[in-house]
Image (cartoon, rainbow, N blue to C red; front, top):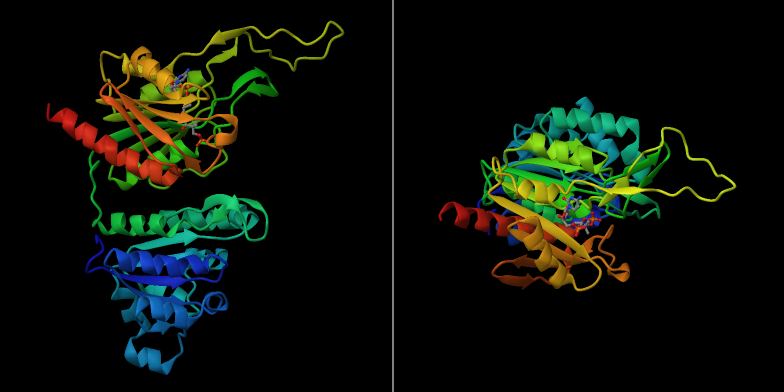
Amino acid sequence: MSLIGKRVLLIIGGGIAAYKALELIREIAKRGGAVRCILTRAGAEFVTPLSVGSLSGEKVFTDLFSLTDEAEMGHIELSRSADIVVVAPATADLMAKMAHGLANDLASTSLLATDKQVLVAPAMNVRMWQHAATQRNLATLQQDGVTVIGPNDGVMACGEYGPGRMAEPSVIADAIETTLGSGSQPLHGRHILVTSGPTHEPIDPVRYIANRSSGKQGHAIAVAAARAGAQVTLVSGPVAIPDPVGVTTVHVETAAEMLAAVERSLPADIAVFCAAVADWRVEAQSVDKLKKTETGPPALALTPNPDILSTIAHRTTDRPALVIGFAAETTHVLDYARSKLDSKGCDLIIANDVGGDSGVMGGDLNTVHLVSKTGVDSWPRLSKAEVAERLVADFAVRLDAGSRK
Ligand code: PMT
């Protein structure tokens, strides 16, 4: 009940994700908050004022030029009586209006008139999201101090795949809590370093060695740590997902670049090595594209990459108080995880089974086992966002316990 006494003005834009706004109202209410809603004309094509009003328990505002509404509560008052303004779903149109300061309906007028923090949860077709105009508007909104949550990757209602799905209502509610400062901030004042995604090890100018890591788990940990109040540096290999908001993201390609970026980012209180770093690289990268020859395929001599986790865990200066590795295994998951805990010198290993049909690499769900010197804690299958939230809560407790020793 961490939103007790808080008032949220929820602006529901027009999109298929509007149905999730109903769930968001419930989620805010469950946490003790009160929700007053503005339903845009397009939003009302997807959810009805009746359902929004029934769930929020308040009058639903729809029309800027309604004498009754203005008599009951003027739009200026409506935008200021809340503690926070949330736009979910935020359509491309609403974001464009906000970025340009347009005010031609109740939603855009209230957004321009508010003196409160605004949080938007975009939802739109992937091409609309990726369009240069939307990305320009997004950058403007971020510069204006608007907090942007999501969008997530996934299959769109239109059948296309990519970023554009609205963030889950529980994640938006978490962001509301954090923004209002009513959530607990167990990592406030701490610096957390996270690696994420694969590395690409070039063979020649057009080919490389890689793996199937999407960066979803590592990025989710960075987001959860930021939400827990930490200053977060995310060192990411090449991924197709957007940089998290509120996190400093450093982009790298190879293991050597990742190690250099990690070392530059120290000191840190906690370092979490979630990246799927290539164990080997090609000994001699070809300057020119390798050609097919009559003598058959070229032999690629491989050489080991630096082990980033082990290097940082064995540092004598600036070793983070908590060094956490992952173990991606396809057999004997716990045995290999225990041996990595020893050989890499880290404080905790998060083991996950990445076998062919687990769908963990690249997927949205994960089943993890926390392997430490004191034992194993196995968690059920959860969304990667939930795994991240729980892991960050666990790391905060471990860090706190360590500093009290
Ligand atoms: O990115 P997603 O699609 O969301 O998938 C998430 C994940 C499966 C990639 C993630 O949960 C995970 O398991 N990450 C670790 C992947 C890995 O490389 O595991 P490993 O068992 O090979 O390596 C053990 C540890 O050493 C890892 O912390 C790894 O980051 C680190 N390592 C490995 C090799 C190397 N040269 N340097 C390293 O730092």
